[in-house]
Image 1 (tube, rainbow, N blue to C red):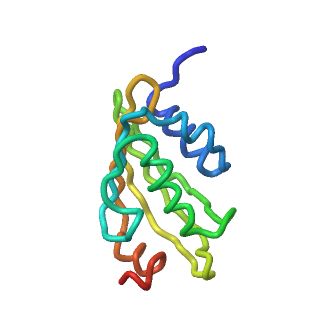
Image 2 (cartoon, rainbow, N blue to C red; image 1 turned 180 degrees about the vertical axis):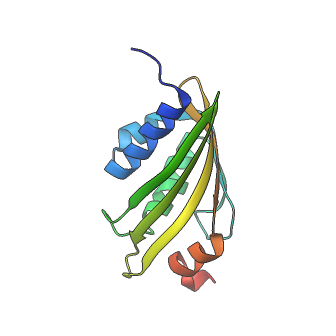
Length: 137
């Protein structure tokens, strides 16, 4: 099997999230990967160390914030240089309360040996908190 480029690894991951392909999502990460998100929304911001923490804490908590099947990623650009991939997208979804979520993201991925090794996520965290966790604000 031919190895994937860093850009293909990230694209495969984003497709898997959209499709709800848990096996591919898990396979996308190195065992010692990390994911950092700015802000102060309990359970979804901060640094998550290791694939198990990313999958079992961060992604599990983040996906519960949205109504199942409502997430739409509109990818604006994916730019790669070596192991670094910058992806810009707009996430549109509904919350379980019926609120509309429409936020822009720029996410930096570091890919090593065909897997995501580190993620740094940048978005409008005040807007995210107001829509996704209004009781926490």
